[in-house]
Length: 203
Ligand SMILES: CC(C)(COP(=O)(O)OP(=O)(O)OC[C@H]1O[C@@H](n2cnc3c(N)ncnc32)[C@H](O)[C@@H]1OP(=O)(O)O)[C@@H](O)C(=O)NCCC(=O)NCCS
Image (cartoon, rainbow, N blue to C red; front, top):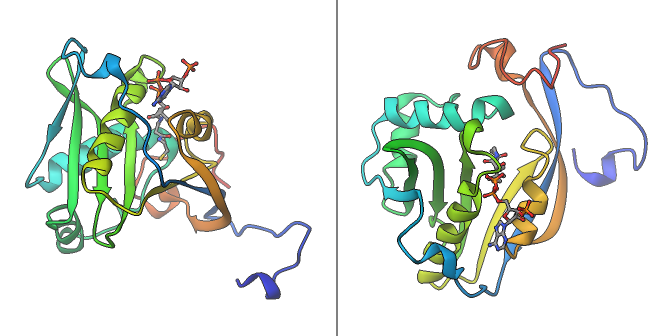
């Protein structure tokens, strides 16, 4: 609803079967120097560019990273729509690899260049807080910078990990916009099991 039609303050009921989230947009217009500790090749994490992602692989990794946080936008897409995105020449899908397994995702969307969007970013739950995120955001910034964009941006919401905004600000992003999002609860819609994201009750 446009702001001029919405009440400025107050509460608005969210229908059952829907979720509400506050979305924060963050951007980077000047790029920080690379982190030296990421460049020494000794990291327990690696980045792997997946040039032609298979749908089963992509959906499985997306769920491994995002199920706890109720990520669903990519699960709601049919095969043709999803392939058109993840195999688009201006969409770069990378996996973070740990002990030989793909446990994190970094997806850059350059379709609206000279802007680049960090479209999906995160690590599997067992790696949260263990330096994988820091490794991955360093790589994301380096990759984006190599294309010389006007800006590099992302959005995160209150369904995501509670440290996500602080993490992105620490990495050099600045918040510039906020929105309220209403969306289908993916557990009710059938994209995720009803046990996913227990921190957000199903209503
Ligand atoms: C958000 C997320 C990526 C953070 O990753 P993480 O693994 O918890 O973070 P790490 O342990 O690697 O690093 C965190 C630390 O590095 C710091 N850091 C991150 N990038 C940095 C940078 N470029 N320079 C300096 N410090 C940095 C952080 O501020 C934080 O500092 P702390 O140790 O004092 O807490 C992770 O929680 C996650 O994947 N969550 C699930 C999915 C999600 O919510 N994604 C984000 C929404 S799109």
